[in-house]
Length: 511
Image 1 (cartoon, rainbow, N blue to C red):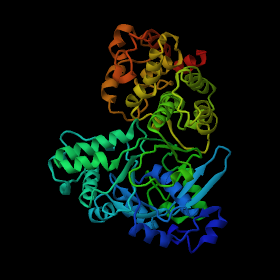
Image 2: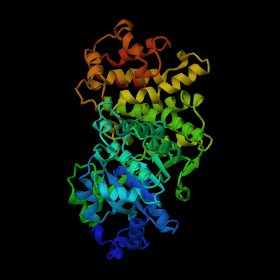
Image 3: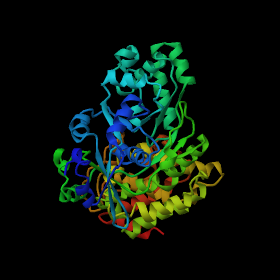
Image 4: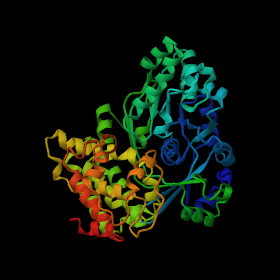
């Protein structure tokens, strides 16, 4: 069974339990190439599990005639090693909590391009039919360094990822200042604003007043909130597909971050600010929520600051300390479940930002009862633990600020300070057995381990030793000493440093 032969061998695939698209894919590809409407930058697993899937659904229902054009950048070789050899097809594997598995062949990618396929991309961007370009390139992809060489080049000479996107927008401006929606779908706060700021940095450097005006009048940069847990391809899923007879599983190394399939959970949310410059696509017919800017902002804060991300970070920190290799296994640990329930229900929900469009209580319940416990989702605390220093001020700091804005004393909090203590304990690099473990990558790791790496089991932390660290608002969102939380944090850290098994005992004693 080869993906490129799926239409010819439809009966074989369907007999094995795969859903295969029924629309005329050849006609869809021709229509898309002649009248492109959607280009997506960042062709990794989240795109294939989410945007490509709801595009496939719209095609299947006859609600659109065009697919999506996928563009790769950082690892441009994947188009040559994965997309094109499989005729731009992939398998979306949805792993459900009840143990059922949905396997669906996705045909919505009409064309796969590299970011340096300049001529073809410029042709697409000059097309009046182009409505929207979307992104899943991670927050790092939007950063423009002051020494970026593209700032001193012409648009035609741009070589960096975002610089090339800005150059493509410049080509669209030169083709008649055609309107366009430029929409980030990355998991970061005010993603559309960050993207807009990056593009405007190039426009300013290139000193074309008309281009600047075009970006501010004919191009929209809506913000969005996206949520779908999509781990790297799991070996168990690989084996399942291999047993079905899918030959494409072995085309890439087993440890590669992509494969012929993407495995994901059944829950998915995408909320987008309803601000489209060249017509709004029918994505709402596939479950995308369009709303106003304030509602998107509140939804993002609800998810990131209360109902999902703080729980994820808590499990990442304590999962590494306790030797877990899967998030779902942690959800069988009554001590950890009790902790994250307290973090979510007792200390998060009282100050949650209610978006109105989604219920915070229902969202949190789904996270705790459906999403995180799903034993078929192969997500790892080590993956979630990456860049924790960048996450804590947003995932916990905003909740602390909400208490302060309401005039409430932060000394009423117990569980969030306990998580902070756990993070400091984690930064020692010693697990609860007393063994060294590899701390997931983090841009501030050298500095933070330089401080916490001096501690060992049996150490006695003091306010004096840690006060400068606990005052850092860049790490915690607020000054924890001034907020009156440093004593609780240092006491809990001391409990966790007593010796082997101390982290477990601290969790057990936490009420």
